[in-house]
Amino acid sequence: MAARVKYRDRELKVEPGTSVRHAVEKLGLSLEGVITRVGKRLVTEDYRLRDGDVLEVIPAISGG
Amino acid sequence: MRCRKCSEEAVIHLRSHRLALCREHFFERFLSVVKRTIKEYRLLSKRDRVLVAVSGGKDSLALWDVLLELGYSAEGVYIDLGISRENYSEISKRRALAFAEQRGIKLKVVDLRREYGTTVPRLARRSTRSVCGVCGIVKRHLMDSTALEGGYTVLATGHNLDDEASVLLANLLRWNMDLLARQGPRLEAWHPRLVPKVKPLCLLTERETAAYALLKEIEYVYELECPYSERATSITMKEALNRIEERSPGTKLYFYREFLKHREIFSPPEGRGRAGECEVCGFPTTSHRCAFCRLVA
Image (cartoon, rainbow over all chains, first blue to last red):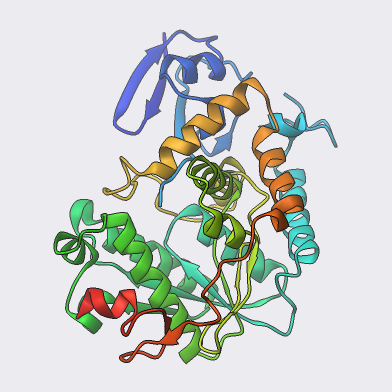
């Protein structure tokens, strides 16, 4: 029983019930610099991951 | 978290505004901020022929989408810089072309390799400037010349609030008075060969433009970052500002907006009125040849 968190080429498993905020912090990232989605749905930081969810953490910061 | 306006499930939480919004109300807000920015800083009129500088990233494609949505006549230019590492330029070009094709709008591709027989990494190797420095010169020149040749009246870029706040911070840290005096949502054409440059997304954060592009299902390059940008100063500045923003939401917007209110205190750059013209391309320069023509010579 787990949810997965994907960020670029990194992937980690977290317990169901983990909040998006906690998952992003676990990656060492700032919520200000990312967008989070489960499937095609964007989710806010209080969303709690369910068993089988894949949370995609998309970087919003770009250089140039 | 629920949308503050309708209680539907929220898709984004804008901590700086203490505002959670659903998809529909997020779009409504996004368009309204762009409209207000255009009006407040007199960026565009419906009579303008707008050329959008398109990179294949979220900001430029979101900008192009929103300008079309607001009824502006907007065509695009993509500059192929020849960055072959990670197939970056090729992938970016494909995304930009796909966007234009889906909407049946014109995208002009300017290919540095085809037109000048070189690429940005190659130019940077024989220059004392950084890759980002060379890239900036090349993009500025090719965007300006495309706008002039195509008869466009204004050039729009996808600079967002994070871009603007990070440049402002970098310029302040160096007290670069020339650049501080020039920074803003609209840069006037100060030479007959130039067109005004505008930044209609400058009051929206990168998170907002990314969310807009994702919710609109715009296929932008999000899986890749320019391979040369890893050590870019702009990213360091953005990360620093985001750390401050986390502690004190709204700081970025306040920092930039207050600067715009007070920027007259920075004196306008001197010497521009005395600029001559490049003997090769005719664009303004203080030297015999402009920086671009010196690079590609």
